[in-house]
Amino acid sequence: MQFHLSREDKIFNWINIVVVGIITLLILYPLLFVVFASLSDPRQIFDNALLLWPRGFTLEGYKRVFDNPDIWMGFKNAVIYTVLGTAVNVIMTTLAAYPLSRRDFRGRNVITILFTFTMFFSGGLIPTYLVNQHLGIINTMWVMILPGAVSVYNMIIMRTYFQQNIPLELEESAFIDGATDMQLLLKVVLPLSTPIIAVMMMFYGVGRWNGYFDAMIYLSDRELFPLQLILREILVQNQMGDAANQAMMNSNQSEVNMIKQSIKYAVVVVSSIPVLIFYPIVSKYFEKGIMIGAIKG
Image (tube, rainbow, N blue to C red):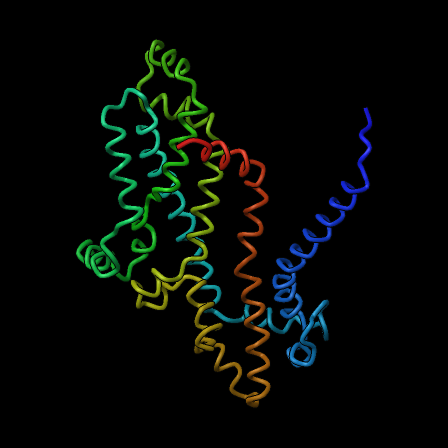
């Protein structure tokens, strides 16, 4: 069966296409500008305000980035914090969400309210700092991994997913076969929860990778700095690190400023690559997991 659109419908569709296209360009252009600028001669970036392709193609910015030991140090630390932190987040969120999804768990509504209360009220930065200090994890890698192990918002999404997608009959049959609660979770619930686990990994992983504020507050040892804190120094404070500064001492000031501009764009691209690689892997689960987990609270 073929449907014939009226003239008004065709006009409306074309208007939608144009509007969506313009919005897409507005969103994509800043990203493309950074990529093109990282591959361009810094002098030509300032001469051409609208950069539609790389001008004066050069990889000098990337060369300087990969020659900077601080970048590699920060990258290594960021990978460690992201991998371990995301693993802790997913495990703790699952262990909190699953019991609260069980209909036979007494007091689950009260506990959920207590969890939700923390979304609106918290102790604040100073009490949190004092707690971490008394735990002895200040200026250690664990201060970047253990605090914030559970996001209440993500826990509620996962709890709702368990409630709507794990049949009660399946749980009852597992108990009849002699399964324990932990066996039910590991062998029945989790294999059926791949979409929501992928979504949680995406949420937590991106947050861990992009986080710099906790590192700025709790870390004083430069060898523990994550990549985003090194990136902040380059972009905001215009500091390149001792090794990079030493390498540019023989250049004049104008050349140094140009090199720094090129490095800024290159390091933004380099720091974004892991997220761009990770997202397509979990994208096929993303829509299903987030929609099912958020339909009903």
